[in-house]
Length: 103
Ligand SMILES: [Mg+2]
Image 1 (cartoon, rainbow, N blue to C red):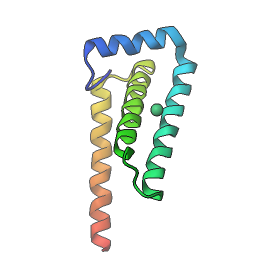
Image 2: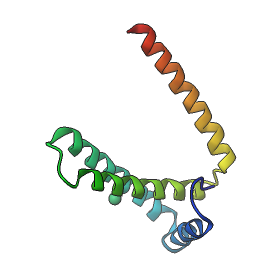
Image 3: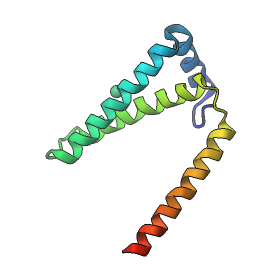
Image 4: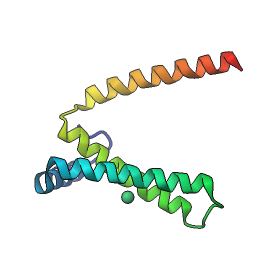
């Protein structure tokens, strides 16, 4: 349920879920997504700051960790996730094809 994470990291995420519970971790996921949104928006709206990439990296890591916890919470298997990602990539391929066709 946690593509790309070690067993130790999965255990830590499960411990966080067990400690703080579903509602808190869903709320934390929303918060981390919002922080990433703000960080990315600042990057495109303002003169790039020296620490911009460090901040983006930090927020991407926060969001990835929370998304993995959401896969754990909702019992989404690695196989189900890979299948859905494959579907999403097919859709992306289709959108690109349509976009290139209209250019
Ligand atoms: Mg954050």
